[in-house]
Length: 170
Image (cartoon, rainbow, N blue to C red; front, side):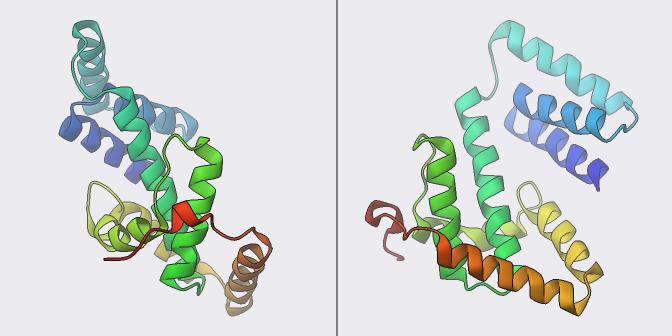
């Protein structure tokens, strides 16, 4: 699983001309004790060149992409556990606003609308959704029920979504 995520990050580094995705890939490679390949070494050298010449994706855009991944992954996990699209999107919008201090806020309606595209995009969520699906298949029926009940309880005890974060679905 870690190798897929590292490969996704390296692909993003090439696609977005981003030294930051190389950093994320290397972090994943080191955390999972994966071997360093020639492609990884080349990406690392390319990232250093981008930093020296101050070219490539800016850090804020990279951070926004990371927050998008985490937000949509939460939606995917809640959907897999039985939550509705609306409920999962509202929870993810609330979580994102609280955890980013309002810097990377996203409307629940936008999250709900954009989630299917993220889940199908091979450079964005397809890898994450495939891994989530594999994890869910390994759960027993009672473990799946526990996950569903845990998500429903979490959604029930969290404060309601602020009006400004709800948005209107178009």
